[in-house]
Image 1 (tube, rainbow, N blue to C red):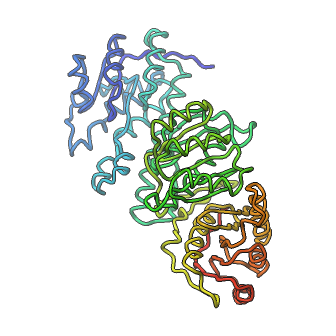
Image 2: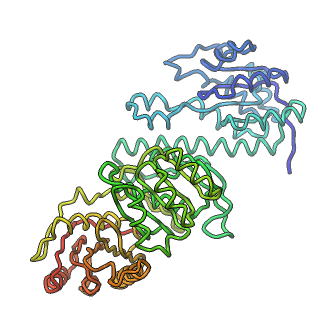
Image 3: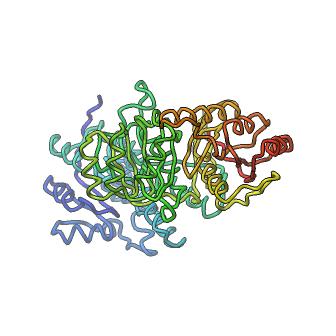
Length: 530
C-alpha cells in the first residue's frame, strides 16, 4: 500500500459543528502545526488560548456579504491545490505569496438540519455552504499532498497518524479521507437538489441525486454471500432509521426491511382511536389487529397466523406496557418497535438479551409525502410514497346491498392492511382483526384461496370448528379481473368486499357479488405493492 508521507505544517479549520474542535486544535498546536481559521471557528480557538491566524489576515480581504465570501481566494485555494512537486506550481506560489495548506478541516453549514426544522425558504438558502464544499473538493483533489477532514469522528485517526508519523500523514489515509470528502459533498448537494425539486414541485428532475450517511455496516445482506450496509437519509420520518435501539443484538438487513414494513403498516391506525399491533414476516403482515389495549391487539393479531409469527417483527402504535410485553416475549420475536415503552416493559424485555427493542418517539404520517426508490439494472425507479389513506376515499357502493356499519368499519380496516401486503393481496378481516392474508401470488384467485385456507388453519389453531373467514369482509389491493377471486371469498364465508374497481369486467363481478348476497364498495384507489 502507498505510504508516501506529507508533513503537516499548516492547517485550516472552518467548522459549523464544533464538537471536539478545541481538543483537536490543541493537539495540532502541540505538534507544532500553525492554525488558520474563519469567523466563529477562529473565535472559539482564540478563546481557548491558542494562537490562530484569521483567514482575513491571510487573504488581505475581510469577510463580506454576510459571510458568503471569505475563503474564495487564491491564497486559500492555491494553498490547497498546489502540487508540491510541480515546478510551475511552486513558482506560482512564490510569485504570488501563496503558502501551502497541508490539512483542511471543514464541516458544512447545517442545511439538512435547517430543512428538517421546517425553516423558511430564505433560511434554507442561507444555510447552503459555498466556500466549504469548494475547499473540500480542492483539498480532496490534491490528496497527494493535502489531508481533508469532513467528520469530527476522524479527528482521532488523523491525530493518531500525525503522532505516529512524526507530524506527517500517509497517502493511504489521505485517499480514504478524500473519498469520504467527495461522498460528503455529494450527499450535501443531493439534499439541496432534492429540496429544490420539492420546492418547485418537480417530480421528475433531469438529474436525481441520492445521498445518505452510514448508519452501520451490516454483517451481510439479504443472504450471507451479499455484503450490506444501512444508510440514513436527511428525511426525519419516524421509523427504523431514526429509532433508538434500547437492547438486543445488531439488526440484520432483513430485520431492518421487515421492521420498516411493520411500522409503516401500524402507523395506518390512529393511536388516539385504538391500540394496534402488526406482526410481519418476510415483509408481509401475518397478523394485524386493533383493540382497547396493546395486549388485546397483539393477541388478536397473533391468532391470525401463530405459525408465521414465530421469528417475526412486532410493531405497536402506542407506548409498550408491561402487560403486552409479557405476552409478546412468550413467542420468539426478532424485533419489537414502538413509539415508546414504560420502564417495566423495558425491564421485562431485557430478560431476552437478543430481542431487539426499538423506540421511535412517534409514528410516521401515512399521509406524508416522500420518495420511494427501487434499483433496476442500470438505473433506479423513483415514485411518490403511497400516501393514499382509505379514510380519505369516497367509497362507492356498487351492489344491491350496502354494507352495514360494522362491515364498513372492517372493510376500511382491511383496505388499510391490503396497502401493506405484497401483490396480489387479499385480506380477510373480522372484528377489526385480520383472520386470513393471501400475499404475493401471481393470480388474485390464488391469493383469495390462500387467505381462506389461512383462516381455516387459524381456526384449527384456536380450537374453533368454523373458519375464521365466516362472517368476515375481504379487501383486494387491486380490482378483480374475473369473478373467480370474489366467489372464492364468498365460498370462504365473506359477506362484504372492498376493492378499487376499474376492471373491464366490473359488471360481471358486481353481478356475481349480488348473486352471492355480498355487499361491495369501490375505492377508486389501487394499492399495488411489489
